Picture 1 (spheres, rainbow, N blue to C red):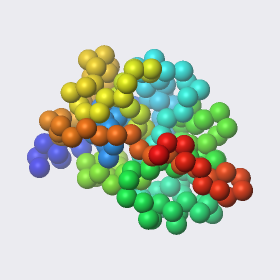
Picture 2 (picture 1 turned 90 degrees about the vertical axis):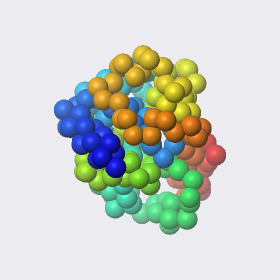
Picture 3 (picture 1 turned 120 degrees about the horizontal axis):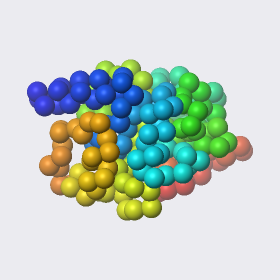
Picture 4 (picture 1 turned 60 degrees about the horizontal axis):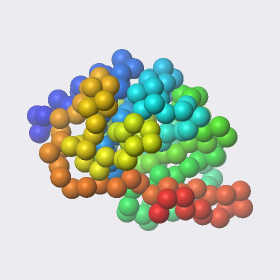
Length: 190
C-alpha cells in the first residue's frame, strides 16, 4: 500500500502546482489536472492537441460534491445515479466554480462520481474536482490500458501514477447521459 499512498501524495502535490497527471480511473487511464485551474486545463488541451471548444469531464468523490459545481440541483439525476453501477458521466446544464475553459460552449459540464479506490482517495485528499480526459492525442483511439498510452502523453505530463500500471484488464469509457429541458433522459454514449 506504500506505493498507493506515495502516488496519492505525489498527485496532490502536482495538482496543487497546476501540473498534469496521468492516472488510473474507474474507466480508462486519464490525463488530469485541478478542474478549477484554467492554465492547467489549457495545458491539457495543448498536450492532447485538442480544440479548446471541446469540453472535458471532471471527477468528484460524492453526490454532495456535485452540488458545489452545478447551478441546478433539482434535476432527477440524483435519484438516477443512486441506482447505476456502470461508471456514468452526467452532463449538467449550468456549471459553477470550475475553470471557464473546461465548460462546453453552452456552460454545461460532464461530471462523474468516481468510486475507484485510487481515484476516490485522490479526490478526497485533494479536496477539489479533477479533470479526467482519455490519455490520447485527440483523434487517436482511446487507450484501454496503461501499456496502450503513447510516449507523447507519458512524457507530456508532470507525474505518472505507478499504481495499477500492470493491470491488463481492458477498460472502457464511461456512459454519458443528460436530461433535456422537458426532463427526459438522453443517452449520449451507452
